[in-house]
Image (cartoon, rainbow, N blue to C red; front, top):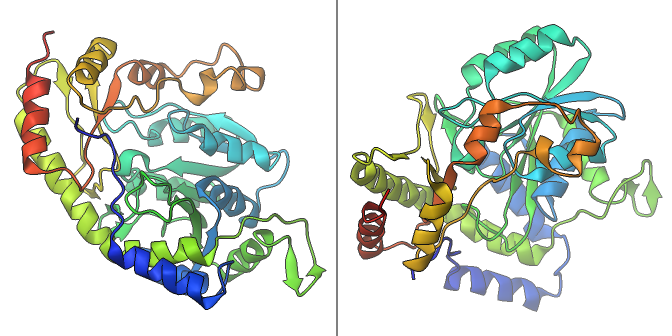
Length: 362
């Protein structure tokens, strides 16, 4: 069996967790504070606010950046549903635009068209999907021209870069996830980062019941805090992140080099400006479902990420126009499949994986 994902938790993480448990301070405390500073610094931002998971980090990022009920937020339909749901949590309205057929990321040309049609759009939520940065060279001029609030969903892009600048450091605020399958983990957890002090102050209140002092609450807030136990794992994982990402890239290079000759499979496209961190190694296959079954029979873990665009989810069909069409996202959703890419893969497993894929009969 070649596992689809495998979190790498070593003795260092276990030792750090035991230190926290022995300290008697296991809720959000000094270890969380330190992890926030280290993570924000690594990503090139001034402030970090740790949260209970990636979805709460994204919700807080939107709220702290000023998204209010009724606001229109432009975003992609091809992502995990939490991206759209976080907009709804704010009482705001998601406005979907289609994706680029090569990168599977939100298409800047479609963004420009939507903004030209609707001047009431207040914000843009981009998703750096699969470990690849969006086209920030085309997106940032649109943000500045239309005075948009820019939120980055970096749940899958820990350490990814665009022209040497890390994802999460472009916008007003950004959100990361530390779910076990991510490039680094805290078991479960998230982080909002920002360079704006006002956003950081508001976010810190929001994750702790709107608290401004002991038992003083200035706003409606939430219990979105991270524990020191989770932060202890994260602080060690962060030190390993660069090596984890390097191994993912090496695995991806091997797979792409050895699968390039298959006419029925399209390997991931990486623009020259981007440093991919391969949270997912996602290929496009015409006979996707038959291929997935073949992999399963051969003991290869895989995942279809994502089979249904958000605007076609049953719940969202009650919110958006049922006739709304995102043809590229809808086509891609029928053809993509993600293969094992995690840093625990051995060379023998990579070779076996290539052999199994090459053995699929089209």
